Length: 116
Image (cartoon, rainbow, N blue to C red):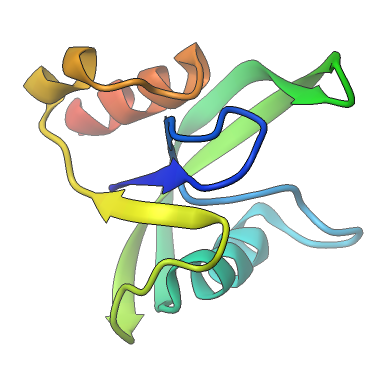
């Protein structure tokens, strides 16, 4: 599943649902919180797919970040995009080259998922 960004940076590109961790938050708690905030669903996080270095444009500066991608199962709710998400779609591995993805880390995480 990818979400289309409704805000800058990288507006209208496809991204993995998620966001920055809050102080004291684990990767799993972050995934649960972000799924509720961005997608309106409750999830059960599963295995970590991997970690993927990237940069995030903030105030005209590329900040190094480390993305942590986690498999998850929706256990409650219906997918409803929040105001920072304009669309939610599922893509096959073959379709990835035909869409505009936020960065290589997002694409690499999605490709890694297909290896599971």
